[in-house]
Length: 230
Image (cartoon, rainbow, N blue to C red; front, top):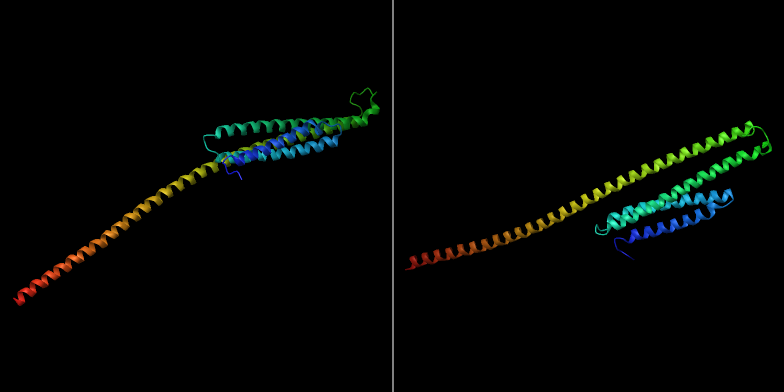
C-alpha cells in the first residue's frame, strides 16, 4: 500500500478523471440522442456523476493540506484545472437541460395547434397561447430554481472553504501545542536529571559528614583513654 503523502490525492484525482471521462461520453452520446426519455436519463446520470466529481475535488482540497509545502503549488494547480473542467461540464449540462426543456415545452405546445396552422392568428388558438405561456412560466420558474441552486452551491463551497481554512489553523495550533509540550517534556527530563544528581550528592555529603563525625568521636575517645590511663 502506497503511504506517500500524495497517494490519496492521486487516487481522488484518478477517480475524478474517470468520472469526467464518463460525463464526456454521455454528453457526446446519449445526451444528444433523438428520444426525449433517453436524453433526460442521460442528463440525470450526468448530474449525478458531476456531484461525485465535485466530491472528489473536495477530497483533493482536504488532502492537499497534508502535502509538503515544497511540492504543494503543483498540486494546487491540478486542483484548479479540475475545478475548471468541472465547471465547464456543469455549465454544459445546465445548457443542455435548459435547451431540451425549452424544446419539449415548445413541442408540446405546438402539437395541439397544428390543425390551426392556416389560421390568421400566428400563435394559434387561445388554448395554444395559454399552454405556451404556461410552458414559458414553468421554464422561467425552473431557470430561477436552477439559479437559486447554483447560488446555494456557491455559498456552500465558500462555507466549505472557510471550514477547511479553520481546520488548517486549528491543525497548526495543535502542532504548535505539541511542539511546546515536547519542549516542556524535554525540560522536565533535564530538571529530573538535575534533581537526581543533587539528591545523590546530598547522600554522598551525608556519608562524608558521618564519616568525619565518626573519626572525630574515635579521636576524642583515644585522647580520653590516653589521659585516663597514663
